[in-house]
Amino acid sequence: MHIEVSNLNKHFGDFHAVRDVSFTIEKGRLIGLLGPSGGGKTSILRMLAGLESPTSGDIVFHGKKVNELPPQERGIGFVFQNYALFKHMTVYDNIAFGLKVKKQSKDQIRERVMSLVELTGLKGFEHRYPHQLSGGQRQRVAFARALAPEPQLLLLDEPFAAIDAKIRHELRTWLKDMIERLGITSIFVTHDQDEAIEVADEIMIINKGRLEQKGSPWDIYKNPQTQFVASFIGESTIVEDVSKLKGFEDASVWPGTKALIRPEYIEVGKRSEFRIASATEPGRVKHIHFRGSEWMVEVTVGDTTLITYRSLEKEVLQPGDEVSVLVHRAYLFNDNDSWIMENKLKEDPMPIHI
View 1 (cartoon, rainbow, N blue to C red):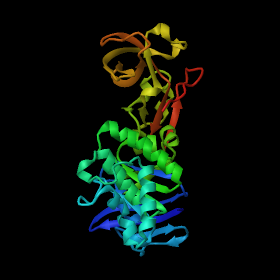
View 2: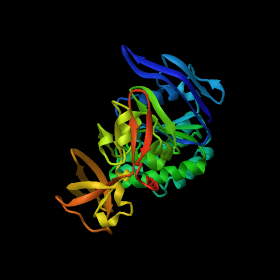
View 3: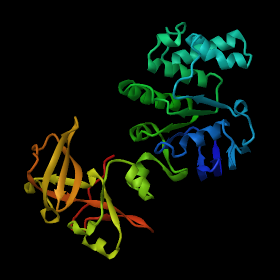
View 4: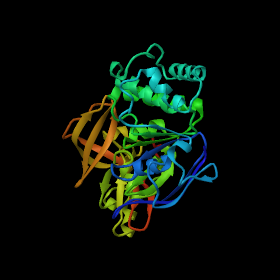
């Protein structure tokens, strides 16, 4: 399903929940609606589903305006955060529910249900009840039930929120693979950055009811278009006066400009480790934190504390160690603009790894 949304607004009394949002979604894409709680993500999803009516603006599916179309006529499957399974029904009957409502024959229903049981990895669980399943299995049943009527659009509201971390990671991979195989247009709401980056083809970042940016996870991470996006995606440090850092003195020509510096923009280590030693400046290790695959290092440079990562293969630094610090680049922003500034003392840029 191809989707076009134009100038969408939603008011709840005096509260302006969604503010003039416009976007298009190509058929077969998996889109993540990402942003802080209360930002308007679920309101957008519910308007697409027909569970809420827009205050103004248009929602168009395949060239047809659907603002007044009831949910059951929009060709949508909806997966809720809390599964919303029928407790008194077996896995088979939960999946078959929408097909029975459409009055399909028993043979058609059985063929479709068993196909989805196989697809979702639930074979052997058809006659169990929800209370006899794990959280991950219950969510798979919810997916299968939503897919049973063969919707053109799948909407998922924080589908992994009620599942423990290990199963959540497995379900992310499973969901992405399943949707790619089915080719169904899908939109899921999440406030988990890792989830959006790992699963989505494109991310739409929603904040205070506005669409801040839409693009691939890599594009959004590499080229944030607003201060909010730059600070929301990934870890970072805000530096009030970046011109104090070596190689960034030229930033002083823009009074009031601040900098956002991501961990991967920074290197820290012994002076002998640096090929471009002239671009480094002295720092002191404040704290180190073991992160499993690497060390997270807090280092002070003058009166500024920066955060970066260090490989486990390198010499382990200790709090209080005197080190050299190289800031490769910074994301600068002020009230009117934002841009990336490279360290002018460097000979070549450092690649950014997401």
